[in-house]
Length: 132
Image (cartoon, rainbow, N blue to C red; front, top):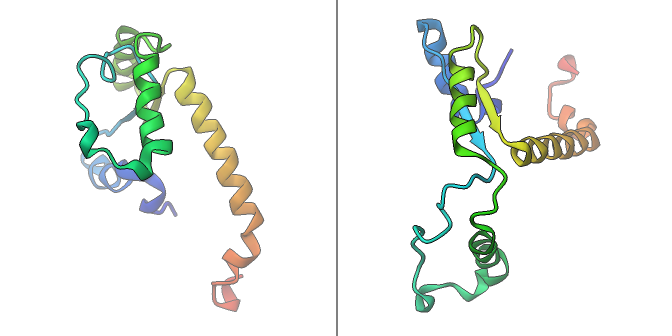
């Protein structure tokens, strides 16, 4: 049995609409050269920035700004990949776009598997004894 919680934001949607013949695809891109973090980005004025976030969100914003224009993802190739996926006979429900997206997803899966495995006994202890 597949549980909607494991499908992310598209889980419940695809479960509702696939029986009707509607496919759902969640495209998960890595960094692409689209200028979203460049000159077209709007940011809060310095007087509205939160100092406690300087080392986290602030550092991420600065990194995005510094690296804009050097992202490995090609938007035209991503569009081709999405087209290929949605016109496939059996399209994926999720499509990672670009090497960094793939690498980060694989790292996350490894991290999740390690944590779930480490806590398996406690996890399973929450069931009634007859279901263990």
